[in-house]
Image (cartoon, rainbow over all chains, first blue to last red; front, side, top):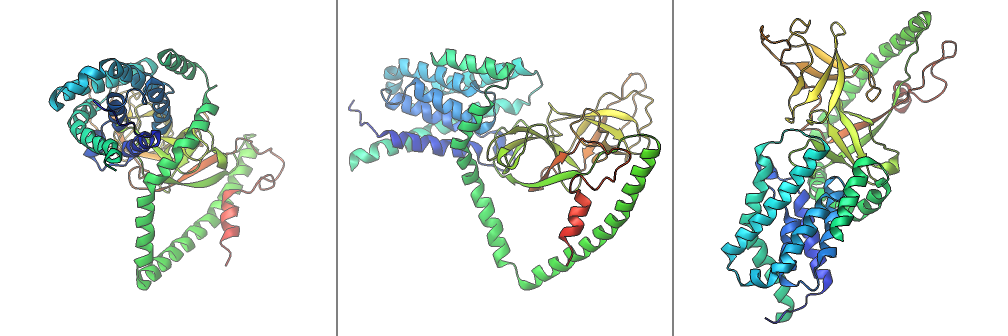
Amino acid sequence: MIDSQPDFGRIILTIIVAMCLRIVPWPGFLASINPDWVLLVLIYWALAVPETAGIFNAWTFGLLTDVLTGRVFGQYALSYSLIIYCCLILHKRLRQFPLPQQGLFIFCCLLFSQVLLFWLKNIQHPDQLHASFWLPVFTGTLCWPLVYTALRRVRLSRRAK
Amino acid sequence: MAIIASVALLITEHTSHKLDSLRAALSIVVDPLKYLIDLPTVLIEQADDAVSTYSTLKKENTQLREEQFIDKTRLLKFDSLEKENIRLRALLENSFKLGEQLLIAELLSINTAPYENIVVVNKGTRFGVHPQQPVLDANGVVGQVFRALPFTSEIMLITDPNHAIPVQVNRNGLLTIAIGSGQLNRLNLPFLPNNADIRPGDLLITSGLGGTFPSGYPVAVVDDFTPITNKPFVNITATPKAMLDRNRELLIVWSDSSSVSLTTQPSAPNEKTPEGVGAGTTP
């Protein structure tokens, strides 16, 4: 597989777009199923260009997401860097998988991230959460093919030129 | 290494406030995104203003003028009542709280966490906003400043499950605590015994206990409830007075905690709100 090395700016741009999507005020029900776009984009880049988008990258953007969404510091940074670490280890195998199978892996990643957030939230102050807390995991998995194809186009568009 | 760093960050943040400056610095990087997302809403509003007709504006203007006239007349009465109140409290050798200073902040239409009732406004520490400041709107208490960043600040609504506000029943002064339910139109009053003197339709106002909220602002109206005779506590709910899901403008309040000494005139030390309004509106 010949990797086209996209410039770092392109990666950052897509992540910024993902951050914007994260905080867009979706109306009503859509707001509660808004998936974790930043994580999806980070996973894609970790699978596609593991040399450029590493753990430190994920950690930094996790920290920024923490500030953006007003969480306790290090929450997203921790979950993102753990997940990206798994992706980096498995990236050779994951690239060979067909999309549905990748989707299963993404589902596990998103679920792990949400469980970690849930757990950290409970440590700080236990309170009951609505069941819709878990919905972004499912929508995130459903959005993965979309993210995959869109980012693939972004990555390969430069090579065509 | 990243894991160790994040765990360390989590622990420090949880135990102390040392990371506030780091958060402020990082927020400068991401705050432009919040304003960017808010931009379409602002543009639509401006476009709406631009295309509204002369007659609509005229009508709105007249209406606002009438409202202002009525409010001003009310304030006249309020002013004299306040003076009288201060005199009476002086007789009782009681302290009286000065008026509050207000800052209008506008909501940024972004959504950070759907399962929490936290909103973001466009005023931050650059305007002197600090955590735990009360936030009001024209109808009642909205919440308190949860975290102040340089350009934005996060406001926890009174309906957040982690928020509790000390209130009293306006009719008879019964004190209790209202806890958020997570839904924008409901507060819970879990600490009232079965024989408490509270009725549906009672107005709950802030009691001023706890020191965060100034006393006397309307919070919520008690909903219908049925007492359960075999339980020690009743499950009473209340509907917030503030329009939590509709308002775009909020008021951040600096409540001046210095009390009036019994001998001096109260208007001397700082510009009070009623007088400020009076001075600003002289034609």
